[in-house]
Length: 177
Image (cartoon, rainbow, N blue to C red; front, side, top):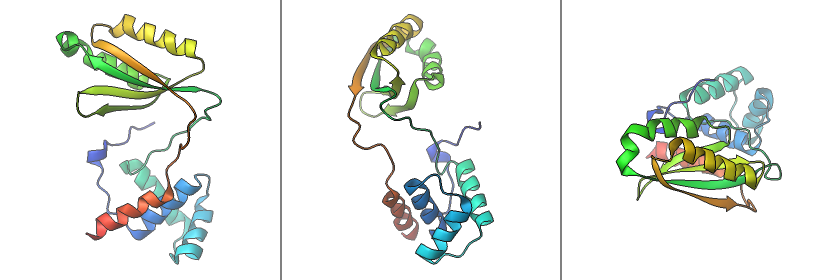
């Protein structure tokens, strides 16, 4: 599996067709390229072959315009938000290994850096709260000198867990400016 470019490395000139493809895929990721070509024609009056649709999707994926992920239903996993506060004294010699371990961990759904007080944050998934607690214990054993604190919050009652198709319309307004 190839790693997509970082968000600031993405260089893509959005066509109206691209925006509509992203909208329809976010509405229904299971659409075939033939179905998508038909929708583009019928709904948006954009005539394009399914081969072109397939190529466009592949190129956008390869360029990092979007990423695909399988999102499990929350009934199968407990979701948790973890925040990592650093120990500056040992940060330099251990930060990279800690970061790579979090990125590669099977429990990590999303991993990002927040502004303000420099922190790593992750959204992670565990089958049980005990497994979550065990993960924290093992992380401290392996990387305790790098972090001063791991804060974890239980995420429950997920009320929204998807991308709204309308968000892609903002790409059109940005390309028109």
